[in-house]
Length: 89
Image 1 (cartoon, helix red, strand yellow):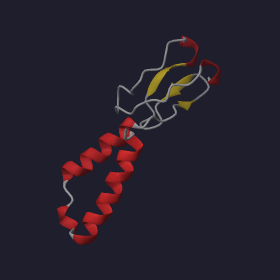
Image 2: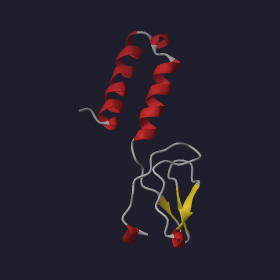
Image 3: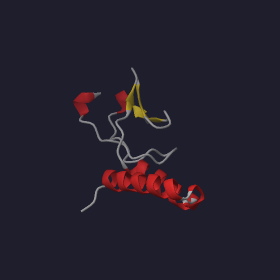
Image 4: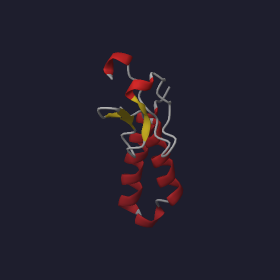
């Protein structure tokens, strides 16, 4: 089974191949597919003293003290969030 990361790498290789032959042949829809794949690869959240933030857009995901689980995706940008162990905070 192909992972999101493998699919993204494949799309980026295809993009280079297509653009090498025909710059205008790479479509906006293909770019949208690349951006969507990038969002599916989990990023570690950005930790501050009191908050846990999305590494993509820096939106607050939760406070360190709240004890709530991290969301699977950022509600602002849609980036998938890597789930950290509680002792990582």
